[in-house]
Structure formats: structure tokens, C-alpha cells
Image 1 (tube, rainbow, N blue to C red):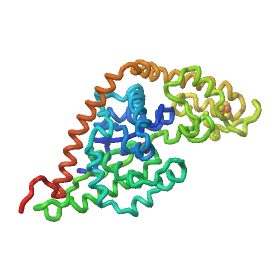
Image 2: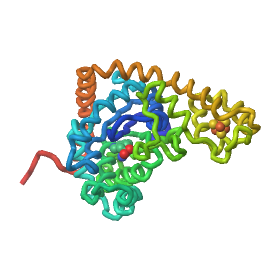
Image 3: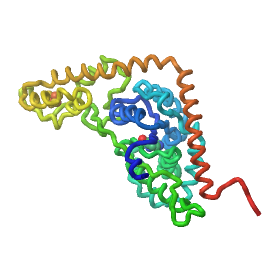
Image 4: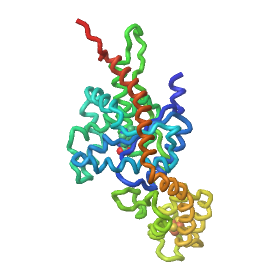
Length: 347
Ligand code: TRP
Ligand code: SF4
């Protein structure tokens, strides 16, 4: 019974750090997934502000001020606080507590071989040489198992963290899953989750590299129509197509990749037109830009409306934290009970 049911998402948890304005990469890679999933399963969407401390520890307030605008972006993108539980990690102290318990039996070697550990340290000027940064995946495991998440929508870059979550959950179940009186039957205390990868894992930036704030190649979601148009018109195309009459290859063109999402019905036509040089890049970009602007218009309108609604945003997050704590509290109790860490002491 259990394996069958787990194929369909039942419980979803995902998290995002708030590091600034969300761009098209977040929208296509993550948010559209969140929005679709909230109709299929019970979803928990979390601002991972404890995780942000790893990079921002001397100036946490710099990270904290990004939280409300990011949540406003989420809501403008279609995440509904009536369908999903939206909350901030540090408002639910169970995360820190469970992470501490899990840390006690997570082998150091698992964390040291985590590919994101060395990669990130090598690619930043920030000091990531901390205990907390090494333990980043342990906290992420706690985030996930606290909500009994069966599925976790994430980007490909997060797969190693999900694998660690699975290993940590299995290890806990191995140690503490057996209940007295159930002899051979191992009963899982923690749910071992699966990843859900986005259909649009890698959104190209204006320069043809992956869209990322640090590359300065993004289209920000709340950008004006004029600014989106300006950026799209200077976006890289197939670099081998130099003159208007040269045939192009859409496979080497970041502009073409946008058609997948914004105008899939035009893909065939563009593909042929580009390869035969019947279609020029300027026209190709113009028709696409019109679609991008049109698709983002509802987001911009909603985001503008939310800009003056701090009270509402606080209500959403306070309510979300209260809902999250109910579930997280139950899991933490189940974990401690399984471990025998109960508040009854006997001589
Ligand atoms: N590490 C994730 C990221 O940087 C954020 C995150 C924290 C997360 N906890 C999570 C994602 C739990 C999924 C599930 O993108
Ligand atoms: Fe890219 Fe379109 Fe130009 Fe072809 S015509 S190279 S798909 S921008």
C-alpha cells in the first residue's frame, strides 16, 4: 500500500532562501511548480532564513529584509495562502531542534563529500568555513521530515541535499523505527521523501549562461514592460548567426528556449524560419517579447497591489507559522518518543 501511494504527491515541502528579487529563472524553475502542486497536495512553502545565516551571519538583517518582498513575489506568482502553508523557518523553532537531534548521528563523511559543500566554498568570497555550513543539509533534512513530506520540488542543484535527507531519514528509522511489541516489523518514524524536478530546470539568462542574480543576466519578475523589452532585444542569440541572411540554429539560441514556456505553439514555425533564415532575430525576439510581457502582466499587477499590504503579509506568515507548528510539533514529539526522550524520568 505505502509504495503505491507515495508515487502521487501527498505532502509537499519546499524552501527557498530570500536573497533578493525573484527572476524568470525562479518563476519557471520553481514557482510554477509550486503553484501547480498546491492544487494536488498539502503544500508547505518555507522561507529558509536559517539557511541564509550561513552566508549572512555577520549581517543577518541584510538577509531578513528580503523575506517579505520574496513572499509577496510568491503570492503574486499564484501561491495561495488558503491552499498552502506559507511560513518562515525561524518562526517554527522545531526546525532547529530536530536539526540538532539529527546532527548527532549524521556521519561527518556524508557531509564532507556533499558536492555543494566544496563547490560553494570555492565559488564565493563569503566565509563558509563554519559548522553551520557543513551541517546545512542536516537542517534541510529536518525541514523536510518535520512535515512528513513525500515529495520535494527542487532544482537539480539541490538533488544531493535531498539524497542526504533520504539517507538521514533511513538512518533514523533504522535506529528508532522498531517499536517494542512489534518484533520484526520496522515502522518508519520519518517519511523518506522523493524529489520533483521542474520541467524547466535551467532557464537561460540574457548572456546565454544559466539565469542567476550573481551573473547579472536576469529578467526580474516585477520589471516593467519597457525594461523587459529592452533586455530581450539585447539577449544573445545563436552566436554563429552573424548576418541577417545566415541561417540560424535554434538549439544554440537562448531566445528559442523561452518559446517552450511562453509560446510553444510557435516553436515549429520559428524553428523552420530560423534554419532557413526566413525569420530574422529581431522579429523573432519581438513576437516572443510580446508574449513574455503579456504572461508577466498579471504577476506585476498583483505584486504592485501587494506592495502596500504589509499587514496582510504578516497575517499570512503568522498564520502559516501556527499551522506549520502544529505538524512540526507532532513530528518532533513522535521523534522524541521513538528515541525514548520523554519528560518522564524514573529511578
Ligand atoms: N537549500 C535550498 C536552496 O538553497 C533551500 C531549502 C532549505 C530547501 N530547506 C529546504 C529546499 C527544504 C527544499 C526543501 O535552494
Ligand atoms: Fe534565435 Fe530566433 Fe534568432 Fe533563431 S531567429 S537565432 S531562434 S533569436
